[in-house]
Structure formats: C-alpha cells, structure tokens
Amino acid sequence: MASLKEVRGRITSVSSTQQITKAMKMVSAAKLRRAQDNILRMRPYAQRLSGILANLSSQTEGSENNIYSAKREVVNNVLIIAVTSDRGLAGAFNANIVKGVVALIDSKYRSQAVAGNVTVLAIGKKGLDAFKKKGVPLIEDYSNVFANISFDNVRPAAERAMAGFVAREFDQVDLVYNEFKNVATQIVRQEQFLPIEEKPVEVTDKAALLVDYTFEPSKEQIIEELIPKSLKIQVYKAVLESNAAEHGARMTAMDKATENAGELLKQLKLTYNRTRQAAITKEILEIVGGAEALAAK
Image (cartoon, rainbow, N blue to C red; front, side, top):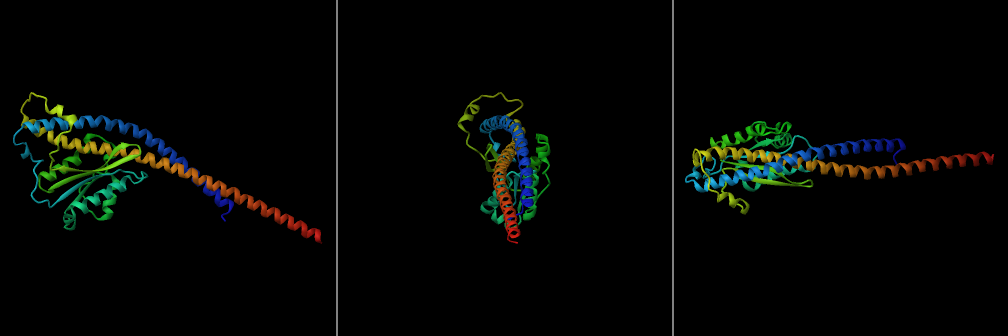
C-alpha cells in the first residue's frame, strides 16, 4: 500500500492537472464561439459563389476546357492537402486526418504510393510532423497558417496546389479536413480539389441557375476570374471548418479529462483516508501492546 506522503503527492498532482484542463476547456469554449461564427458566415458565401459559377458554366460553351477542369487520362502524380492543427490535446482530431489520408492512399492511390508519386501538402504542424515520421513526401511548409487565420495566409497553399496542377506536376489534387458539425462531432471530409468535378446543383441552388444575369465584360472572362477564386475559397473554407472543429474537439477532450480527474481524485482521497485509518489503527495497537507488556512486568 502506498504511503500517506505518496498519496498526498498524487492528490496534489491530479488537482493541478484538473485546474489546467478546466482552464483549457474555458479557453477552447471562447475560441470556439469565434471560430463557429467565422465558418457560419463563410458557408453561405461559398455556396452562393458555387451557385453563380454553376450558372455561368452551364450557359457558356467550352467551359469544360478550363485548365482547372482538365482531366488527365492517366493519374500518375497525386497531391493530398491535409488540414490538421498546430497543437494537440484535442482527442483523435489530428489522428483522424492522418488515418483518413492513409486510408485514401491505400484505397485510391496504392500504385502511385508504391512508385513514390503521392505527395502531401500539410496545413498544420501536427500533420506535418506525422507525415514526416511516416516518410511521406512533403512540399512547402504551410504549417503556420493557424497562427493567424486569414484568406491571405491560406491563399499561398491553394495557389501552390493550383500551380502544380496547371504545370502537370500533379495530375490530381485531393483535400482532407475535419468538417465542423457541432461541439462533439467532427466529420472527416475527403474531396477532389482538382480537376474540378461537375457536381449536380442542389435544389436550394436551382434558383440561382434561373437568374438571367447581365455580364460585363463577358461570361468567359468572368469564369476565368471566378474559378481560381472559388478554388482558393474552398481551401480557406476547409481551414475555417478545421479550426472550429479543432476547438470543439479540444473542448470536449478537456471536459472529459476534467471529469476523469475528478473521479481519480475521489479514488485517491478514499485511498488516503483508508491508509490514514490503517496507520492510526496500527499506532493504537502498538500503544496497547506496549502498555500490556509494561503491565505484565
């Protein structure tokens, strides 16, 4: 049985840890509110931009010849944009992205991976470190995005992927990130980033397709401007989704850690009381035994 000093030390240590997890939960809750507001404002804009782009593409002949829509007959080189976080202590948040990328490679790009033609663009330090350990080829370091999240800071990562696709450095680009659903739920999304897929327009977007726009200067030129912007917005939206999901995951993890620390404290205090009672009983028995020995003399 542990000594009273050891049990007191463990109680002090667990109490300190509980205070830290409580503080981290409160910090994550405050950050989550801002991050959630950002992504909720971003989603309608991104959806509306996609609707307008679908409208223009459906009315413009030859839009399939856009450089970002060109499908390669053979996909030899693949780039995967993996969005993680800079910090841990968020449960399985980052591990799920790493597992998602590995699963994507095993199921879709096994032959390319064997040939060493699968590259990862990691947004977030945790993903960068994880893929370095796995020996996965990496390109430029964009792990500092979360230090100051803004469109201007995210844009270079999107532009790097777009430039690599146009230059035929990569034949396909996929995007893997955590989508924010609620505080307790994050969904790992795997999306084809390039070439652009033709997606059926949702019912909520059909109204946008029926609008008769007046174009200036021309539909074709507007599409050339909108498509690159839409692609950059897609990556920016993924980063905002991941940021909100990260704070939700960390808040949940710290809440659970605080509860576990509380349960552990109860057990330690019970052990402490039992150990103390055992020590007192032992001392009483020693005193009684000594008194009886003196009386016998």
